[in-house]
Amino acid sequence: MSLSGLLILLIIAAICGGIGQSISGYSMGGCLISIVLGFVGAFIGKWLAAELGLTYLLPVTIDGETFPIIWAIIGSALFTMVIGLVTRGRKPV
Image 1 (cartoon, one colour):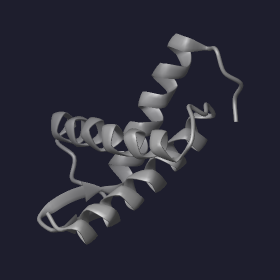
Image 2 (cartoon, helix red, strand yellow):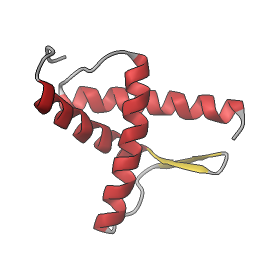
Image 3 (cartoon, rainbow, N blue to C red):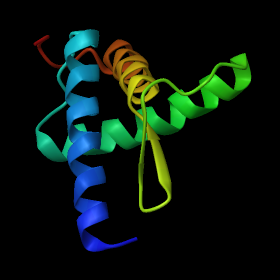
Image 4 (cartoon, rainbow, N blue to C red):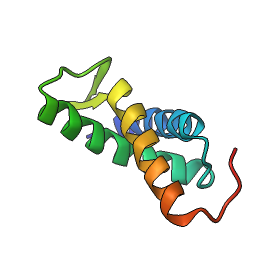
């Protein structure tokens, strides 16, 4: 993967993670946390779509890596909700 492809994926992951945090109503941190949530959300979303037999919604392919935008947002929102329920230490957004 090229450096420009990696940077584009990091930006997309940060946006998806930020949207996922906004949907869940629980903020876990700044930009780096949003990037991590975006990637974790993409893995959760891909797994969920495969288990339910659903197609990828709005996939973006960069340097051979497919990143499902909608499933990443849904996965990061679900992951953030679970973390929020477990920790309950921070204020909602």
